Image (tube, rainbow, N blue to C red; front, side):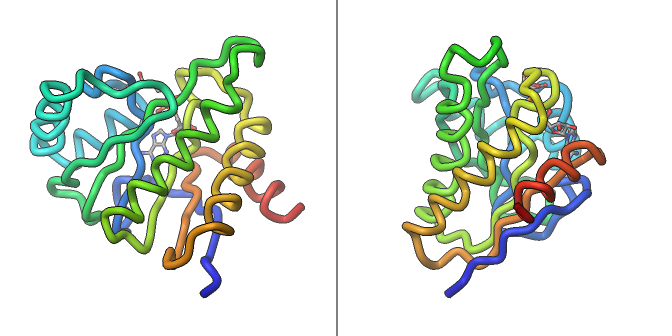
Length: 173
Ligand code: APR
């Protein structure tokens, strides 16, 4: 089955998909940007799950992912991943960013998810250049989908026009 891969300009917290991905930080204790929007809209159940994960494994490393309830959100799960902070491009940022997408999709598959929505990880506070991030994001998702069956839909959710244009440009290239 062919998976649909598309860009959408929207608030990720509103999407009724199986899993939305959160661009978190390694503490998993919330923050601003998309992280703040997801915790605000989803309510305290998400943070409660995050605390349980922290107690068990002590946070989440860059490039890795963990899964929690989605609380009051229309999604079933939130997958929290930690993107790299942009540091000029010579600190394995691309590899770490690609790992975020791959590990999030892997966790989604393991939890029976067939539709997943991603934000543009690292392109806000973490300062990853938007066009570069779009290339890494789309390449990583496509590589995963080529090797894994069963995912129906992957949505790249862009909050702003610049990210939307960048993702569209890569998808249409
Ligand atoms: N829906 C979709 N995308 C959103 C939303 C939203 N509601 N809100 C913000 N975004 C977009 C931003 O426009 C940006 O393109 O998410 C992208 C990622 O930006 P950040 O949320 O700043 O994430 P990131 O750059 O990965 O930085 C992570 O920010 O507050 C935190 O706790 C988080 O410390 C971590 C850091």
